[in-house]
Image (cartoon, rainbow over all chains, first blue to last red; front, side, top):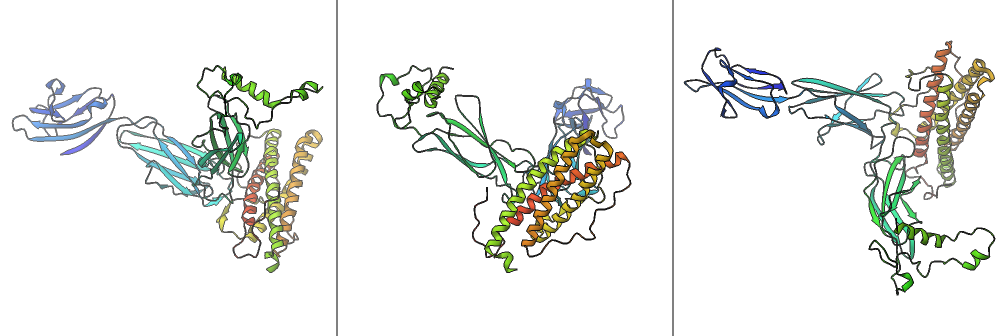
Length: 335
Length: 195
């Protein structure tokens, strides 16, 4: 006679040896190992304040004949805590999915039940094969102001718990990040990087539901990002890159009208085009703490050099941006 | 329907759709600002649930992706004509209730009303292009204002504005669907979008 018995962590457990009398002579084993008599009260097995390590197979044998009289599988666990539930539409306007998990494991089997109500209508959330704790719903209506109410209940042998999420159609729209982000230098342009990407493949109709994009980039040596928001197109040319410095670039996407920004895409790295150094002069060699090439901050011959005469002779404050860039770059090196 | 499919008609349609999409975007942005002002001035809770308001066209659509272009235009036009009347009522009620004490809310309501009227006209233009012509407004006058207490009127106003914000999003989507070249049309390859 074998069955499963679920008990809470910390509980006191008493196991009877089937129909044997209290005063019968019995031997108890746990996973095949004899249990010391000090744990017995007559033929009853007493386990005080059980912990997870005490899960296992418990068997009771009649004293003299060693007949198996009772067997049980003890599973020590906890009732479920309030589950964590999130719902999101990454394939608007087709539908949305909800996924959940428990904040702490229960160590025993759990079952999940999800209900989705839109106004007065109960909708079916079809469970995904993978991942397990996820289900998806097709929108039956679009542009509704009526909120969706999703309730998830988790149940196990020791208890149950639930959580409810209420949201409107637009609020949960969050595309997946853009895909295939590529960044390339632009020949003969030491300050440019050409970046291109694609709409996430999960977004079903970018023509009718266009995405807008947010690009961020910075040289590896700096912490501060530059940002550009792009209302259309899947490419952008960065025109203010520091010459010769390796950049890290990421892109995010958002529906043009509703919802929230996607996570950042996978980061790509690129370095703007630099001219092959022809010869190095003494003035060009700079003492550096990094191993960067000494030609990095020398403006290539094609770069327009500030006309000192124009700057000095002019009455206005003329900002010579190239000189300023070089100075700023030197400043960066010595941070 | 040869006229509707001619290259010039297709170009005109795309142009009207592009402008309509921009109008809808601006309208939505202004309606959302108006909602904030309205909620604050009327002393309402922004998260208050409002049951479906009688006489307010619901933006919710089933099988939205299966609608024809003409149906989209007709549904939109009916909605914006209704909103035009509803906003005019709200403006009048607001003036009666608050008089000149809250000119800002009145101005914001009036500005949105203007945009709604402009958008309705824009839709009529698109319908004319479909060789369909807009339906007349005879007999489709504004519903008589229901006899509601002050608080109910405020909630009704909230419902009107929320539904209008929803429509503004839907309208942009509808116009994008409309702007797609129809299969088998004689239109030239898509021209560049007008700025």
